[in-house]
Image (cartoon, rainbow, N blue to C red; front, side):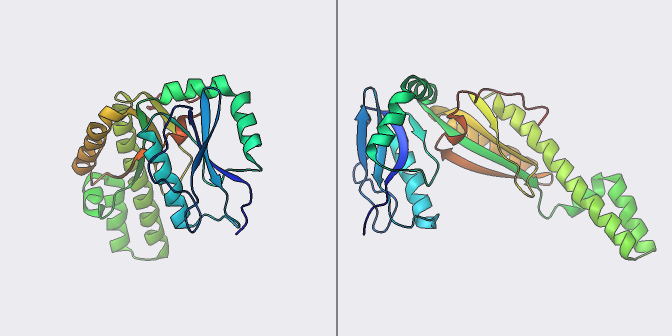
Length: 249
């Protein structure tokens, strides 16, 4: 099997040790190595031919980044980052050495936690009890059943579920932002009322997740919270990733 370039996992400090027995993408997992230039290093392996986003490779990529995070700060690369050769990788590391070093300093001792707020499941009884408009439309649909009445009721229910999820999501996001080092809005996700990531100190991650889960339990009739983390700090590698206000999200 002939390698097709160099697969890049992360940029780290040159003194960072590779996790024992670390393997990379590919089948069998490619041996991982460190290439160094000055104060920084890049964690790489040979890129397997016909690389695709297979589940095993996605998990191998993320697992290696998390294991590296236990050794020190990590500037993670997205899955599928392939360079022609090691020289190209080192050239990029050197050209942005000061920026990379500053990012690693900013991420030291920290991790990313992602929060998604979705409309609550099985919340129709609470919705009808608390939303006058929905209650009136349901009563109207029962008195005069038909396509238009059902359509109006369905649209009202969907809108109310999304609004309630967004309101609850913004509330917990504001609270969690006060416990985080930085906040980054994520891309829009279909069916998701709120998508945000938080940069959190490693020492605070368990308490941070615990607070979010407690909120989710108390407000389960308003929102379904999906939490992911600790994660590699993908959302905070850019110098532009800074704390942002949450209230207007």
